[in-house]
Image (cartoon, rainbow, N blue to C red; front, side, top):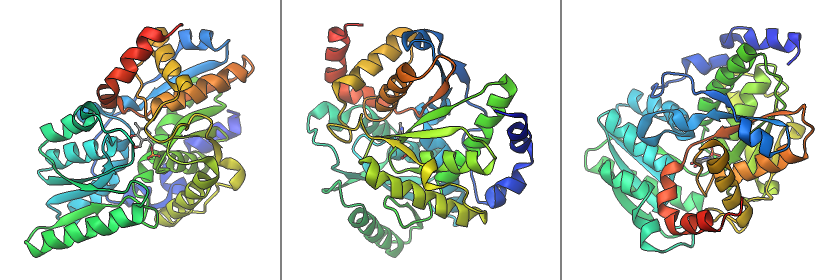
Length: 358
Ligand SMILES: Cc1ncc(COP(=O)(O)O)c(C=O)c1O
């Protein structure tokens, strides 16, 4: 980072991030997650420095990126005096687990609509991992049969909300599909500011941050925030949900909507939206061999636990990019959590652990 960029990043955020400070927000993680060098993984990749930003350490019920995101939804829910959170997610969704925990902390109920997004029907997948956690949290569950119909899932949840209102409740919906204000992305605008502060304090010159790109809230928020703060650090989205061509418009649209929410100019151009979908196959929620290997490499070199749906895919991308980069390159892997899911994939991971050749 050059000195001009450093100065720009240090200007008061109120100026550069518009209305961010005045958006309704319920702080659930009041801290800074660690930014740590991974020396063994750096060596494994041939010398390009690889850091990890530990957003798996955001506290609430196993932490992860969704804690930062949900703060802005729950801020609004509290302002509306909601008594129930309604949310849709995949069976092993981390977002719904976070929503259920946050709802409990704030004295609310949580209703989760599980969509069938992954062709995995074994009992462990359906009962362990995040499902076990939401059951411990006492969330109520219903099912939506189609995992590729976000608008339909949102309509169904709206119906549930109408029924709850008719019964005298006051539900707050966290929507699934695009076309709604991406409040969760604001959590990653906040994170961009936090990360730049750490990078500046450590005197690092960072080239890229590798992030999972699913709903696009993490990717879009971080990219918007870094650009708004004057940083030239690249954000590489590793596709975990859909191919790069489709994901591109989602990120572009998220950034446009963040600009509207904050009353700021959108500085993100098409060229800033970097996506890699090489590690998506065979599809959402199913890891390929390279991804399983990346999970093993992270565990065996750094003691870092990753999940097979999101962070394993991102690590596979980060490792491949680091191996191809010159040794002067410095990259950051954003660990977005998701670790409870390892227990829902225990057979697959146990086999991978045995078969891993190092
Ligand atoms: C652990 C984890 N990492 C990354 C992502 C992707 O983040 P986003 O939905 O903000 O694109 C998710 C989304 O559910 C997640 O649970």
